Image (cartoon, rainbow, N blue to C red):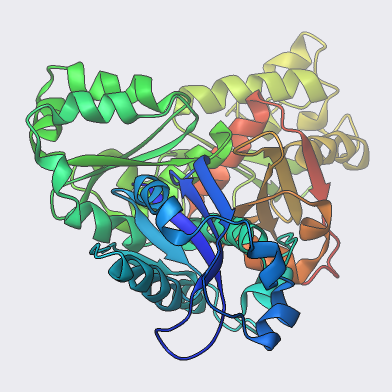
Length: 460
């Protein structure tokens, strides 16, 4: 799906008698700008004085600018097969259609209005005028009331709105309307257009319904595997799929979390596995009657808040063996030795004797607590910062009181240091235990750029 995000400055004047003084259009593929056009336009009519004061564009500036008919072909090329997106799209589309009508050309495009989308997806903002809205969201805007500055800010705003569209209504409605997806070579065309970036992909039927969601570090490679495999599930998907849409996430952790949330939200028919909980075992903590911190391996229990979660029993056993060795913990107090009395490690002098009260609870608990503090974010408030979707961007994951609350993307540090802006750019997700499992498992094996601890005063 591609979009033509535009902004138009006009002469002002009577309805349907306005002329264009400046236009800027950015062709956007849902991830990045792939083409752009901007130009002053000689409107061949006077400019209203209040418009000159607002935009700074006067008649003298436009004396040698091209007339609309001279740029019309370029506008048609850059908007071909794209959805027109603008802040107050009804106005921009009317002005553009009127200019083409004067040339005897019928200009008809699907449109999306970022004012309407923002009111729905980011409610309760103090104002939905472009300038005030983007400032509230920490989005930089230059050359306000000039076409290029306003159109570029609208691109950034639209990227945020796509992120906030958790029900995928924007994409689904245009997949349903797009006739080019009905060609026989649909699979080859889909593979050809797929990006090689890290992200989440959505397979749609002809009516826009999502039938499968996946994530990959190389979306094109993964899509190719789906469409060249001959197993039963892949063959059914190959028959049903009409289009694949994508969301670049910039890094694998956001992709994993987004895939998990989207599958549970949309419940695609071919994603039966991830609809269920992905971890089967968890590690919990308790203090016994002698005052020692115990670690307990148990089956997953949604009623409890575990320290760590694991996909299977063998992985938790292996992890516990490493924990016991690294922190000099007792096998019996960590669930690895189930008999009463001394654990095996005590008999070979590798346990300090907490199992038989030879080591004080205070000394033992210091090491157990060190492990808990270093490993679990059970009560943590933090931001996990990592790579974004391009070099100028970072991703941010919000964890509040040990619960994954959502993710977003930012370009400027003040966006994450201002709680109100951060709250607006974060895409909230439904709370489920799998998110904690995904984050903990990922952080055990991978490095991120930064983890910012939040104080309890931060009202996010």
